[in-house]
Image 1: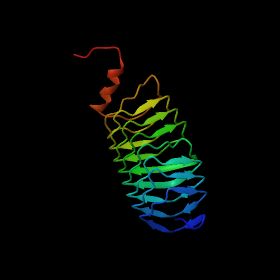
Image 2: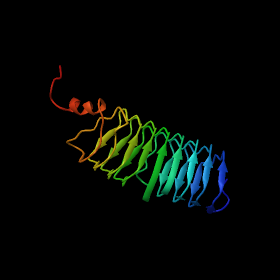
Image 3: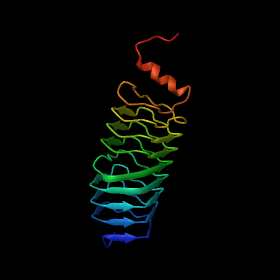
Image 4: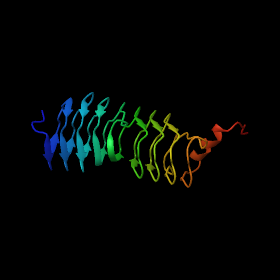
Length: 188
């Protein structure tokens, strides 16, 4: 469906391509595109926006997402770990369930109004990351730098303070009581 390897300031509406290889997108907008179960390899997305798109179960190999916004997108079952740096993404009102973020630099990323269910954050640098009004049910946080991360308006997180650096991270009650469930104590 894509005819060339370089696109600039274009809008794509209801595309359904399943194989994207070595394509560069700069300042492009994708609206209601279905890239579910697609293979994206060596693609670069710079200053792009995805609106109401489905990328569920996509395989991302050596792709770059720099200053990219996902808005109202379905992003289920994606491993972002094979993406290249820089990785600068904002998720707003998305379903980011069953995703994997392993060994990634996610500093200052913004997760806003999103469902982040059963996702894994392992050995990531998440300093100053914002989780604003997100549901983190069953998501795991293992060996992350969460310094100054903000979870104040989010819920259902279970973060082990022994396995993550939570220096100056922000939480609110009653959700912060989840830390107590990890201690060998009884609360009556």
